[in-house]
Image (tube, rainbow, N blue to C red):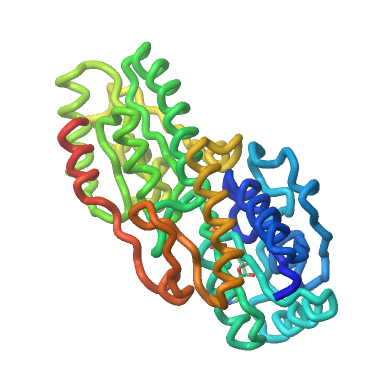
Amino acid sequence: IRRIGVFTSGGDAPGMNACIRAVVRTAIAHDLEVVGIRRGYAGMIEGDFVEMDGRSVSNILQLGGTILKSARSKAFMTPEGRAKAAEQLRKAGIDALVAIGGDGTFRGAAVFYEEHHIPIVGCPGTIDNDLFGTDETIGFDTAMNTAIQNIDRIRDTADAHDRLFLVEVMGRDAGFIALNCGIGSGAEMVLIPETFTDIEEIKERILSLMSAQSRSSIVVVAEGDEHGGATQIAQDLREDPAFAKIDLRVCILGHTQRGGSPTARDRVLASRLGSAAVEALLQGHTNVMVGVVNGEIKLTPLKHVYSRKKTIDYELLKLTQLLG
Ligand code: ATP
């Protein structure tokens, strides 16, 4: 390997820049050249490349977003699009890749390797933490902290008016952010896709909470919750006469959770993983994702990353019920 291409793809996550920096600096330390591929697979197909040196990643460690930009590409889903991407990489002399992204990015990476045999190693970059093969993904800790800070603020206003707030957090089809934020913010209830709670039971629990406490209540709802998210649940509650006297509000935290400066934990994780990805390529690994499992760097085949399901910690779920 002489020249590595690095790119960010799919949903952006705080800490991606710290990861890019680690990839670039580790590669340079091994006398490799590094090319930044802008806008993920879309930029790969168009040949949107930028030469990177040690200085090009100065002062980015602390920035949210990604200096290489991220995108989704329909063209890369087709063999023709991927052939074009491979051609662009060959023209630019890129002989190995580091992909920073989520499960879609790794599905693309795996099929690309099968077809074009350009070695590729993935770094888990998504706020959702829904990737098998790593205890935490880059961006998850920052997103949780952002959500918790916002829920603290909502608590103040909820308390002042004795309101019931349904706060929706991100997480796609997984409840990692919701579960942890629920505990960290002292939410009275947490609704996540991994467990089903009947709407009647939700109503009963909220009513008993509101009457017992006669004060504010916060319910954290994961966006992937099967009742259809906070807006839909609120509608169901409002249609029930038992809720007529309850001052009910919905707050969707949305994209605030994606932005902002990465936490210390995400910076360290991203730095370790970016560096480990380059080392893995140099050791001849390909089609794997680098992760941290029980504190140690671990390589997991990409096909396991996207085909196996990472389970939530059911002890944490019990804790939300016990403490809320
Ligand atoms: P996040 O989970 O944060 O959204 P992601 O990496 O899962 O990140 P996706 O949009 O699902 O984001 O995937 C990124 C890109 O990967 C897609 O736009 C597409 O170009 C490519 N991709 C996804 N799935 C495949 C696939 N099955 N075959 C080829 N390319 C794919």
